[in-house]
Length: 78
Image 1 (cartoon, rainbow, N blue to C red):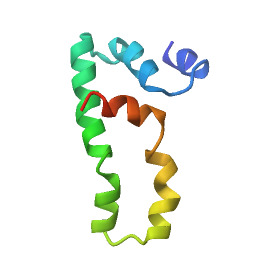
Image 2 (image 1 turned 30 degrees about the horizontal axis):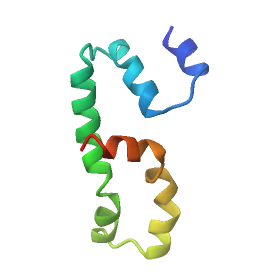
Image 3 (image 1 turned 135 degrees about the vertical axis):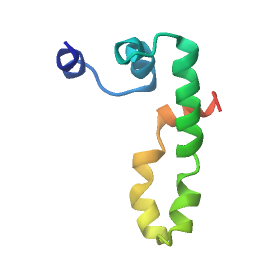
């Protein structure tokens, strides 16, 4: 069933929230708490990358993996 579900959708914050029960996260409040925790960590990605010694060019190449609409949606929860 899960592979059928994922073959029809693309990843998004809204999708993650809607399928949370399929992963044993029954309460919406619990799903939001997890999203808040992960979002808070991901929002620090540039600081972590810099502290690891990555160059500006390397950080710029990674940006699209972290900076997108869904991170902004989670940022509102943080």
